[in-house]
Amino acid sequence: VAPAIDGVTKVYMPMYEQVISVTRAEHVKQVLNASSLREPIPVVHKHFKMFAGKNSVVIAEKTMWRVLRNIMGKIFQVAQLRNMVEDMSTSAAEFVEALKNKHGETVDLCDMFRLVTVDVIGKVVFGHDFGCCKSLQQPEVVSSFQFTLQSFHDRMVNAIDPRFYFYCWPSEHNRRFLKSSATVRSFITDIIAAKRAVPPSERKADILQMMIDASEDDHCGLSDEDFVDSMISLLFAGYDTTAITLANAMAAIAQHPEVEAKALQEITSVLGADGLPTYEHLTAGLPYCSAVIKETLRLWPAGPLTTRHLQTPLHLTLRPRRSSTSTTSPSSTPADAEPMTVAIPAGRLMWVPIWWVHRDPANFEDPLSFDPERFADPAREAR
Image (tube, rainbow, N blue to C red; front, side):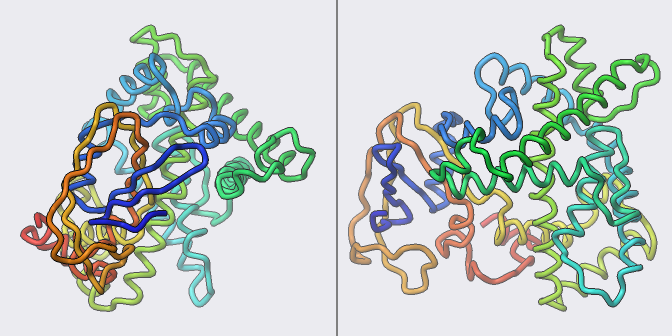
């Protein structure tokens, strides 16, 4: 890793001539506006294909990607999202009631929030109630999915370890992965078959059903296997990410009593003692609670890194400076150096390390402090 200059760092990797990482907000905006292309990184592509399937929307390419994107665009509309809030609120209420029975016990917050997350996903995505919130237990298919997800993460961390790279390696881990993957895919396949058998007039408006209906309307020829791949991708996108964010939010709130008091005051004044939130509450009616979640995502982003491959050359203006309080690598250039422009050629892999972008003092004042007020105050948020 070369020293950073104004948040721009050169990273040397065996698979690439050079990777450029940016952390300053203005540079991040330039990179994301310059390209939407994310070419497959071979090792990531290999393991994600084994985890979610070759036609997962995350790694689908060309025609398949356009078909899936078109279908997803029809589904994730305001009217459809509005209909999902009731299931979300009901699951949350069931979860709170079940947690009351754990009063005085020590629990793993992340594990607890995985239960409510999977129940919400089950209802709004599959039209299926896993019952995790009531029992505070995972059914076999959820445990199987969690193992395959953890296996995917393990394989990313141990990318060059042959025991993880080769799925034919005769290990207990690989045998369990293949068995767990088959359990998940079989479960989703059975749900798809059941939905196809329901007359159109009796179908429920969950995401899977809407995808099937949209596919039939567009005559795009998606197979059941394609739907399974997409469903696993949605589980991947919403399962751990949501649970970890909620756990981080609760941990941060517990350490900041003033934040807890203000959030509870807002909830009570808007919803009352036992009210459940509506779509309008979630989008505009609870601004301070929204600020708490935004600040949680800033400090602990569920996706800590994104990438882009440049399709055209990109020119970045660097203003070298040294900061003794910087949370990123210090610049090796004197603080009074003149601005410079660097040209990055087309084809270069760009990294946007979201974790460090959010913790860069050039982007956020006092970046390591948990301060929801930065998003509760419109003037501060705009800055």
